[in-house]
Length: 328
Image: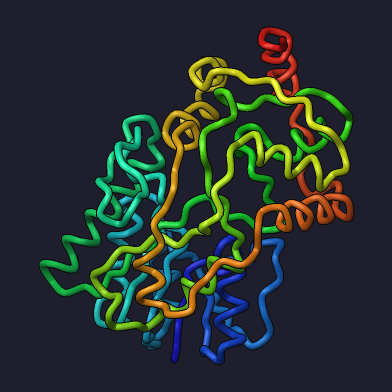
């Protein structure tokens, strides 16, 4: 099987690359070589810029693929480029969308692949929805072999689970220093965290799977945690007792709109996923890494790599202000 990953060295895709090679797939990566993550041995690297059509075509040459996975498209223009570049060149085109595209607020649980897509709060999610709609139209009108995959909150050892605009390492350093940290809402909303090695098991099983063409899947863990439990797991891994201060998401959004968009559009809402579909298409798929173990990996990584992500002074000061206002 010959497969191309557009990207292939990110948080999600790095584990998919490792597992694909392990399973004997002839894997190519189209990337610019800027990731800090190592490329697995045996991978063929095509140096090119997918956002530059001439560069991408020069890198690809006459190669054809059983499957192409696009990890780095975020707006419809990116998808249109992919359709134009890979029509007639691949038996499957997998677009990495986002489970944040599911309707917010959530009306019914658990979420399935037929849950409506709508997110009035977060432009990132609306862009992913628009990408999906373009792909579905191409599949219906011209037979473009699209498959849609919607990860939820997928992490590796480098990614703390707190909102990226909150800056995870800043929160970890506060926990380790015994300082209070901010949790949105009352911390009781339900959330799902998926280790990237677990995600890869479901994803690689879809590669060049003809039955998956024209279908959409989410791939997540079945472990459901509250945000209080998530902060607690990181604190336990760090050997400290957390001091949690609960702040309404709307207040956070007012103080930091970028941070708040991800909260109001995703993390504020409880999510529980029904993974029946991916388990039916990829028999034996099961997530086996609980977040408690994943948190230990993260804390160990940052202990060994303290300069990987700097403390964000502005976020640190914002947390101080919110703590001062809402601490009981």
